[in-house]
Length: 280
Image (cartoon, rainbow, N blue to C red; front, side):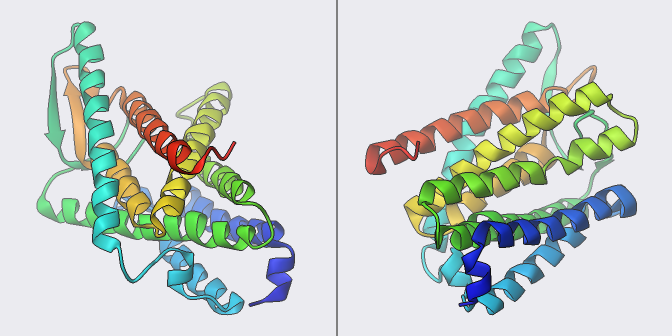
């Protein structure tokens, strides 16, 4: 194992993270791949997967050492999907109730679209776009779970406590998502004040999700439950299954996601506390 990296685990992770988020920001803000026919920022995810393998080689570890276990895939996916489906079912119902109480007619629609904090996103129909959405989201969860819950957590845990490793990777995961509101700010879609509010909220929400998925990793011994929950959040609840009203589409998406994530986070934390005591 590379002693230099492990002697300064958090510093090393911050350097890796800085490289990754630079590529992420460059693709989203400069290349704007999400505005192409593909409708997705994916170069940074492919680059991130490459970085995972390079770092694993440098530190003398294998993919299974950071959670990509050879067994438990089906069981982990079932647990993750069960958590996601149950929490988002409640969230969708709550969202529809809120909208109908505002006098709006609602119905569900299945089509692909990129996530937008401003509610403005290009709609794509057709099986080809749906399959691309599924594929890109698979790449996304492999990269993000492998990087944050896998690589960063494992490196930091070598010389810090489990709690420190969980919180550290969650903070980085929260910061990772600042690119989205920054993109909107640069495009003039939101004000500086809105950017500050949305950025802080996004960091907190993504950080909470990072803690939840790290706890799932600890409880199951692999990344698969977190990957399934992560995939459902991004692919189904954000990109494919939409709530449509007479005035727009997914006007309360952030509320839907927040409700589902709070529910699932509470459930995972309760199970963790019951079985292994609190990390706090």
